[in-house]
Length: 198
Image (cartoon, rainbow, N blue to C red; front, side):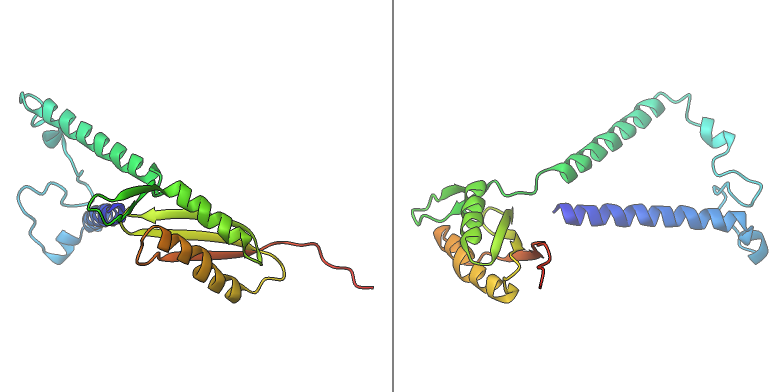
């Protein structure tokens, strides 16, 4: 949901900036006069010598009783939307709990951090893995895992990933009653000092 909201906001902001930029370019180059285009009567910016918002436009509604409440209300709404968007960006994306189907119609909740710890511990017990980090994301009925592995120098990446999938991830998925646990695995090699050959 947040990804879709970000894309919509970015598209609308880009479209607005593009429209304003084209209007500035249109008037600054005096294209209406050169091309013989007739602009609408309410359009005040007709050429390089005009301003976008003249004195009439700036002072037209100042005496109306509704002007300042509407301006302040719109600005307050914009501030609230901006704060909501900022908090949504900073919110933790970790999954706090997983809904386990206990086949009694109610279900049980499994703490996401507990499952992360179990998968991490089992992954680190596999040969070839020096360190592992596990993060659960997604929805509580359809969790996804992000696993980061630090491989020992002798590890074979393909073998490590196969064993991780067949053991640690399969055990976690079965224990939580999940049909599948989509996983993104990132591998890094552990740095080791060069060996001296004599």
